[in-house]
Length: 227
Image (cartoon, rainbow, N blue to C red; front, side):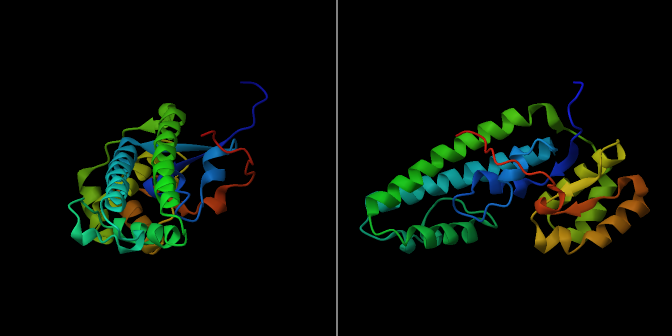
């Protein structure tokens, strides 16, 4: 539309969307980015699938914590994942320990239950908001299988490998090549090696600028998505 300011397109890692969904329990790095009118988020089907899987898994964990508190006289900090049948993924334990630490500061057991239930409802609304907002910006690239194998040799993490491969394929197809993430442990640590590999295997047009939300958000908006 004439008169509209151009936006910067960036490819969002799953952790960006997950941070938005879980912002009560973790430091909020991305709400301004998600709500920004100067940035357009691009995601792949792989990113959305991973997000749905993590959120669904953690939803089951929250519900199990509620059951635990209703069925026992124990405090929330005594909830031990190893004693439960709910499946925990790689980063779930750290997330739950952080959640327990925050809820343990509440004196009222009823308030703990209320906060957990409130969060489950809020998380559902945020997932719906993300899917609605990003509906027109979802891509489904098919990067070379050999490239994924090569990247996985560096990252040794299938989910990260798929994100990098999809983002690089998007860059080669005319995207900005900006990959926004919060992944200090893998993507930032191996950024130089990743780009060397992308350039060597596919060409310089596949290279990525791996960055943090604060580095690309030039005009953050103060308006948050409605809940």
